[in-house]
Amino acid sequence: MTLNSRTGERTGARTGTRVRQRELARRGTRTAVLTVALPSAATLGVFSAAAVAVQHEGGHPPAWSAADGTPTAARSAPAAPAPAADPARADRTGSRPGLPEPAQPAAPQQAPAERPHHVLPVDAHGLSAGFGQAGDHWAVRHTGIDFPVPAGTPVRAATDGTVTTRWSPAYGYLATVTDRDGTSTWYAHLRSYRIRKGPVRAGDVIAYSGNSGNSTGPHLHFEVRPDGAVPVDPLPWLLAHGLDPR
Image (cartoon, rainbow, N blue to C red; front, side, top):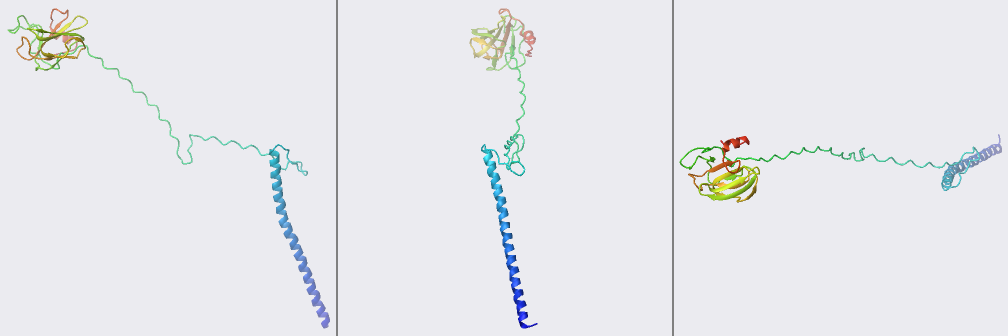
C-alpha cells in the first residue's frame, strides 16, 4: 500500500469517529429533554386535577375525560366528626378522672333519753331516821325520813311541780314542791334556798341542806303527802318509782 492510501484511510477513520460522536451527543440531548419534560407534564396534571376539584367545590361541574368518560377529580367526601372524648377513659397523661365517692348512709338518730319524773332528793344513800319512828326529838312520831348529809348539800326536787318556801319553828327553812296530781314533797331543816317559788322539774336544785329549826344536826328531812295534807311513809313511795334511798 502506498503512503497516500494509508493517509486516506486514517483520515476517513477520524471522520467516521467524529460523526458517531455527534450522533451520540444528539441522542443524549433528546433523552435529557424528555426526562425533564415528562415530570413537568405529570406535575401539571396534578395541578390541573386540584384546580378542577376546587372549581367543583365552588359549584361548577367537574371536567370529564374524553378517554374513558369519568371525571378527572371526584368531590371530596365531608370529613367524619371526631369522636367525643370519653371521660371514663384515661387522658394523655395516663390519669383517670376521679370517681364519685359512694354515698354514706346517714347515721341513725338516737332518740333523746327520757327525762326522769321522779328522783331522790339528795345524791346519797342511807337513812338516819325512818317514818313513824318515836323519840324525844318529836312531839309526835316521825313524819318522814332523814338523810344524814352535811350542810350545803344540794337538795333536788323529787317531782315536777311548783315550789314554795317558808319558815317553820319545827321544820326551819322549809321548801314544798306540789305536783300536778296534788302530791306534795317537803324538804326541811334547810340552810338556804336556791328557788323560792315557781315551776320546777324533777332533778332541779331548789335548796341546800342545813340544821335549821328543831334539829339535832345537819341533815335533810323529807316528807311525802299524796293529798297535800296527811304524810305517808316516803320509802314505799320512792321504791314504787324505782328509787331506793337505803
